[in-house]
Amino acid sequence: MKEWQILLSGSGGQGLGLAGKILAEAALYRGLHAAHSQSYGARARGGYSDSGVVISSAEIAFPLIEKPNLLLALSPEAYHKNARSLDKDGYLIYDTDIDSAVQEKNARGFPITKAARETGNERGAAILALGIITGLFDIIAPKDGERAIADNLPAQFIEPNLQCYRRGLEMAGQVTPGDHTGTAP
Amino acid sequence: MTNMQFLQGNEACTLAGIAAGARFFAGYPISPATEIAELSAKLLPRHDGIYIQMEDEIASIAAVIGASLGGMKAFTATSGPGFSLMQENIGFAVMAEVPCVIINVQRFGPSTGIATQPGQGDIMTARWGTHSDHSIVALAPASVQECFDLTVEAFNLAERFRTPVIVLTDATIAHLRETVSIPDTVKTVQRARPSGPVENYRPYAPAANQVPVMPNYGDDYILRVTGLVHDEAGYSSADPEVAGTLVNRLINKIEKYTDELPEPEYAGPDRPETVIISYGISARAALSAARRAKQQGRSMGVIRLRTIWPFPEKFITDICRSAARVLVVEMNKGQLLREVRAAGITEAYGLNRTDTRVIMPEEILEGGVLLE
Image 1 (spheres, chains in turn orange, yellow):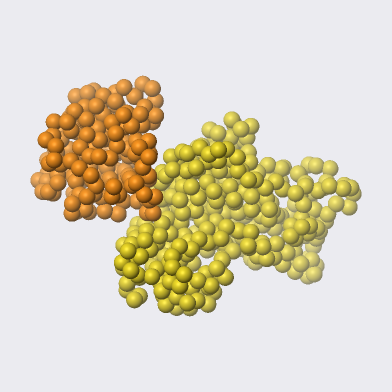
Image 2: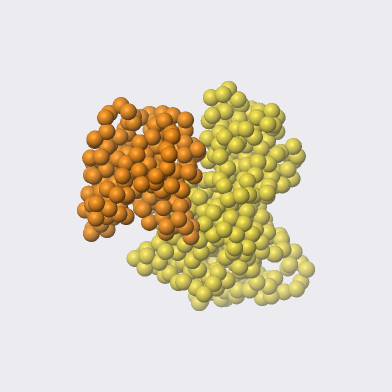
């Protein structure tokens, strides 16, 4: 497999840092190499926030995102800030709530925040998006995603987040295969 | 047996300290080093160790020095502003020959700079931040695994040389998560203790490798501790002979044994046309650039420093001698570049960034092309 450079972006409080760690650990369970970085700072609540995950079958020389080939945008700011840097064959998954004229060719919108809210856990938006990513792309296995969620959350938060994750997997399942699915470009 | 864990650099530094035998941490939390204090507070009590949050960084390094004199392996962690405050007492630890480890997670800019962004601007602070002539050991990890390995090494070198050792990480490595192999046990160095009659014991008489043996403060062996120039018995002195001998010994006990320090790693062809010299997170970009350069049929090698101070001059000059181009890649205004030039590689160029952004592999590839 070619290297995945996955940038999860949105707002502080959406759980992007945790989702990145879970994604990376699920990749490790599969025997892949992974590195995870996340933004820090005063903007951690409410303002722009992101989390980068590099996943590769080979040892990772440079562990940070250079040019994402899979971008998640959960806020308008995240979309406008990062869409330009997306690899020309890269994939974009965005929240349809961001209400922007998305023009990228491999783009697909989902009502991510809305769906997370419907499960009763709006703060699980990034985890729900992780479910979508798991379903659409050959990166991590659903069982590894669930295991990593259970490993990273306090007992009382595991079930609500698993619900978000599974909802994301369902939403991905409704997409016609071929269009927006695949391996690293 | 080893245990694989997915950790941040700061976590790896803390676990390494405990694995190396550290049982005392005193510090003042500061971004981006805070997790080291946080995890030390959690783990040290479980290992019968002591964690103290001090009122500032001056007190933190003072407490660490006291704990070490009392017989414990001790460390602190900080970032630029706190590292500046620690300089006077780092000099004291050099002069009084107190083993200790200072982890400096470099953040961006002078003064309080930007608390959450990375920099590599403390290279010269580590070397010359404390006043007057002295030698210092400073190590620079480039991965989370090395945060573990080199922090263990830092404790061992501190005991071996009876001197403070600085670990220079940066905000990026500190918060990066990578897989780390943590062995069940690590090789540790225990400090040499005095034996023989207590009378006439001279705490600063050079023993093996010019390093005196050290009792615990409060033992029967009398340990006089001072930052003043002192004779072998530990009494302060203004005698030129004593002063010259002491300062020379403090420097020579490290500089004459640099082959015991972590060597640079070289990756690349035998006679590279372009040599990149780098360290820390910048070295990761350099290694990635060299991999791509090879695919393009270009001859690029990377010297990755693990020990910054003492500067591994011979290793670098041996490889650079036949190179057409030498590029020093670092997130500062060329602090190590000056050292490379001083070593006789006068044609070395710098590739620098001082805007909080990490240097990217493509920039290094392009930098190499510009020189060609």
